[in-house]
Length: 106
Image 1 (cartoon, rainbow, N blue to C red):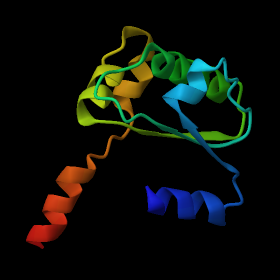
Image 2: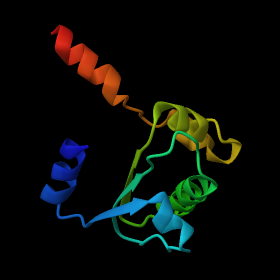
Image 3: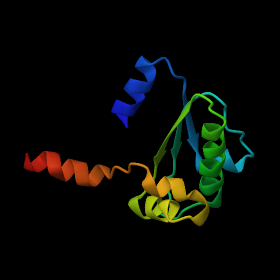
Image 4: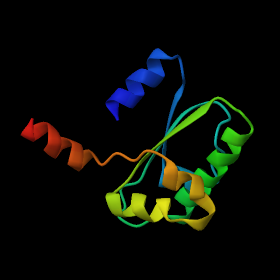
Protein backbone atom coordinates (compact mmCIF):
# COMPACT_ATOMS: atom_id res chain seq x y z
CA UNK A 1 0.00 0.00 0.00
CA UNK A 2 2.83 2.38 0.79
CA UNK A 3 4.40 1.68 -2.60
CA UNK A 4 1.12 2.49 -4.34
CA UNK A 5 0.82 5.73 -2.37
CA UNK A 6 4.40 6.72 -3.21
CA UNK A 7 3.92 6.06 -6.91
CA UNK A 8 0.67 8.02 -6.98
CA UNK A 9 2.29 10.89 -5.08
CA UNK A 10 5.32 10.91 -7.38
CA UNK A 11 2.97 11.10 -10.36
CA UNK A 12 1.25 14.11 -8.81
CA UNK A 13 -2.04 12.33 -8.22
CA UNK A 14 -4.20 13.44 -5.32
CA UNK A 15 -4.68 10.54 -2.90
CA UNK A 16 -8.22 10.24 -1.56
CA UNK A 17 -8.63 7.91 1.42
CA UNK A 18 -12.14 6.58 1.92
CA UNK A 19 -13.67 4.14 4.34
CA UNK A 20 -16.90 2.20 3.99
CA UNK A 21 -18.33 4.61 6.56
CA UNK A 22 -17.49 7.52 4.21
CA UNK A 23 -19.33 5.73 1.41
CA UNK A 24 -22.36 5.23 3.65
CA UNK A 25 -22.65 9.00 4.04
CA UNK A 26 -23.73 9.37 0.40
CA UNK A 27 -20.19 10.23 -0.62
CA UNK A 28 -19.70 11.07 -4.27
CA UNK A 29 -16.53 9.66 -5.81
CA UNK A 30 -14.20 12.33 -7.20
CA UNK A 31 -13.58 12.40 -10.94
CA UNK A 32 -9.84 12.77 -10.51
CA UNK A 33 -7.27 11.17 -8.25
CA UNK A 34 -6.09 7.97 -6.67
CA UNK A 35 -8.88 6.44 -4.60
CA UNK A 36 -7.97 4.24 -1.67
CA UNK A 37 -11.02 2.49 -0.20
CA UNK A 38 -10.41 0.61 3.05
CA UNK A 39 -12.67 -1.76 4.89
CA UNK A 40 -11.89 -3.21 8.31
CA UNK A 41 -14.84 -5.58 8.13
CA UNK A 42 -14.55 -9.19 7.01
CA UNK A 43 -17.84 -8.94 5.12
CA UNK A 44 -18.37 -7.16 1.83
CA UNK A 45 -20.40 -3.99 2.31
CA UNK A 46 -22.93 -3.07 -0.42
CA UNK A 47 -21.43 0.44 -0.43
CA UNK A 48 -18.08 -1.02 -1.49
CA UNK A 49 -19.71 -2.80 -4.44
CA UNK A 50 -21.48 0.42 -5.46
CA UNK A 51 -18.28 2.47 -5.19
CA UNK A 52 -16.32 0.04 -7.36
CA UNK A 53 -19.15 -0.05 -9.92
CA UNK A 54 -19.15 3.75 -9.99
CA UNK A 55 -15.37 3.73 -10.43
CA UNK A 56 -15.84 1.58 -13.53
CA UNK A 57 -17.98 4.34 -15.05
CA UNK A 58 -15.29 6.93 -14.26
CA UNK A 59 -12.73 4.82 -16.11
CA UNK A 60 -15.10 4.34 -19.05
CA UNK A 61 -15.48 8.12 -19.22
CA UNK A 62 -11.66 8.28 -19.54
CA UNK A 63 -11.26 10.29 -16.34
CA UNK A 64 -7.86 10.32 -14.60
CA UNK A 65 -8.61 7.94 -11.72
CA UNK A 66 -6.99 4.92 -10.11
CA UNK A 67 -8.29 2.60 -7.42
CA UNK A 68 -6.82 0.60 -4.56
CA UNK A 69 -9.21 -1.47 -2.43
CA UNK A 70 -7.85 -2.63 0.92
CA UNK A 71 -9.96 -5.28 2.63
CA UNK A 72 -9.83 -8.76 4.05
CA UNK A 73 -9.08 -11.57 1.59
CA UNK A 74 -12.64 -12.84 2.09
CA UNK A 75 -14.16 -9.45 1.21
CA UNK A 76 -11.88 -9.08 -1.84
CA UNK A 77 -12.88 -12.54 -3.11
CA UNK A 78 -16.55 -11.62 -2.68
CA UNK A 79 -16.03 -8.32 -4.48
CA UNK A 80 -14.28 -10.03 -7.39
CA UNK A 81 -17.21 -12.49 -7.71
CA UNK A 82 -19.84 -9.74 -8.02
CA UNK A 83 -21.65 -10.34 -11.34
CA UNK A 84 -21.78 -6.64 -12.24
CA UNK A 85 -18.03 -6.29 -11.74
CA UNK A 86 -16.72 -8.83 -14.23
CA UNK A 87 -13.82 -6.55 -15.17
CA UNK A 88 -12.62 -6.70 -11.56
CA UNK A 89 -12.12 -10.47 -11.73
CA UNK A 90 -9.41 -9.75 -14.32
CA UNK A 91 -7.70 -7.03 -12.25
CA UNK A 92 -4.57 -7.69 -10.25
CA UNK A 93 -5.09 -8.69 -6.63
CA UNK A 94 -2.31 -8.71 -4.06
CA UNK A 95 -2.62 -10.62 -0.82
CA UNK A 96 -0.30 -8.88 1.64
CA UNK A 97 -0.07 -11.91 3.94
CA UNK A 98 1.08 -14.06 1.02
CA UNK A 99 3.69 -11.47 0.02
CA UNK A 100 5.04 -11.30 3.60
CA UNK A 101 5.41 -15.07 3.64
CA UNK A 102 7.29 -15.02 0.33
CA UNK A 103 9.65 -12.28 1.56
CA UNK A 104 10.28 -14.26 4.74
CA UNK A 105 11.43 -17.29 2.74
CA UNK A 106 13.74 -15.35 0.44
